[in-house]
Length: 222
Image (cartoon, rainbow, N blue to C red):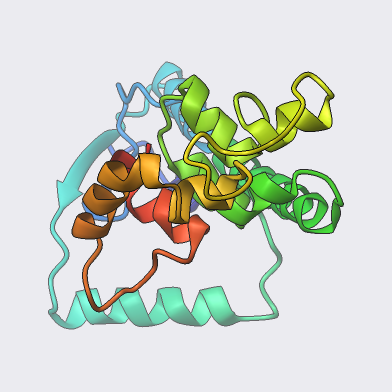
């Protein structure tokens, strides 16, 4: 915006004596042939073309920021201007990336709220407490993994609930085949359980947290 305002001011108030615009190399993304398209950059390019048609010569150059008197003065004036309540706001457009980011945050908040308040999916909720954490986890679903984290599928308590089988006893004969039984106590899963325990550091002791098991030890848990 500062560059655009400077060009407009020069065009209205200065003689056509080849103005040169110097831009701080750390804070600028503008160049005459820059490929990025935003509203403000397009306006600057349009203003430069308009001035060149009017026989102005506009040049852009990169100037490294220095801590000399001029650089410090420029920084001080910029800070004063940005904090002043008396200067009229001249640019209030919001970048598309900002809108997208804010919408993503709002959607995640709404999704998380519904996830926490729903009375369904209790088993899955015990594995995935936070929606954002789940989205960041790359999962290659398998039938067994889905059965464990949902309590549906090839779990005998679920199949018995549907009256497909007569009882829900685990093949190990040590209790009903539930999700917790399969993870923590089933003798038939002892080898896999030992491998999982070996991957968990002694300081964490998170075997009892199904959420941590999936998020931190997915490769061993799956």
